[in-house]
Image 1 (spheres, rainbow, N blue to C red):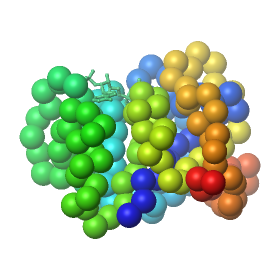
Image 2: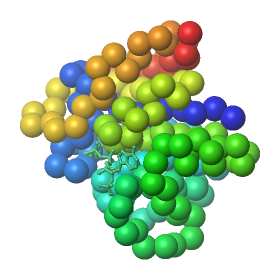
Image 3: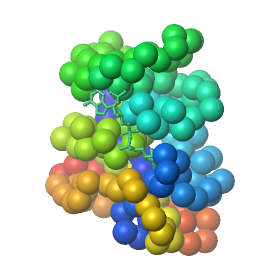
Image 4: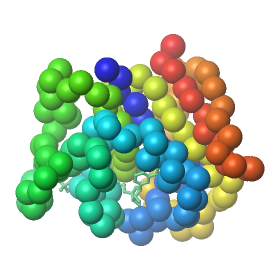
Length: 158
Ligand SMILES: NC(=O)c1ccc[n+]([C@@H]2O[C@H](COP(=O)([O-])OP(=O)(O)OC[C@H]3O[C@@H](n4cnc5c(N)ncnc54)[C@H](OP(=O)(O)O)[C@@H]3O)[C@@H](O)[C@H]2O)c1
C-alpha cells in the first residue's frame, strides 16, 4: 500500500490563503475525489477545519497535537506521524497525504508518489506554500490533462 501526496499548487507553489483554497476547479475536485475515494486521507487540523464535513467514503485521519476534535464516524484523530505510520500496517488501502503545508512537510520522506495539479495562476496574498524542492528525488512519470490549462503531473520516487 502506497503513501501518496496529492496537492494543487499555483505557479509559485502556493496552496492556500486565509485557511482555505484560493481557487475552485471542479475538474480538480472530481480528480481528488476519484483518486482518494476508498482510501485513507491524512490531513492537518487546519485543513480539517476548512472542510464542512468528513470526506465521504474515506477514512479521515486528522493530525493534531492537542486539539479536541469531536468524535464522529469515519474520523480518527492521531497525535503524531509515527501513529499514522503504525496504522498503515493495518490498512488495506492507500494513504493519501492531503495537506496542508505542515502535513506535506511532515510526510515528505514517506511519500512514494506525488499527484500535483498545476493551477495556472499566481495567487496574491497566499499564506501556505509547498516545501521547497518537495519533488526532489522524484521523477515525472505521467501527465494527466483534467481540462485545457489544468494538468496533473505524477511523480514517482526514484
Ligand atoms: N492546494 C491544496 O492542495 C491544499 C490541500 C490541503 C490544504 N490546503 C491549504 O493549506 C492551508 C492549511 O495548511 P497549514 O499548513 O496552515 O495547516 P495544516 O497542515 O492543515 O494543519 C496544521 C495543524 O496540524 C497539526 N499538526 C501539524 N504537524 C503535526 C504533527 N507532526 N503531529 C501532529 N499534529 C500536527 C497541528 O494541529 P494542532 O494545532 O491542533 O496541534 C497544526 O496546527 C489552508 O489554506 C488549506 O486550504 C491546500
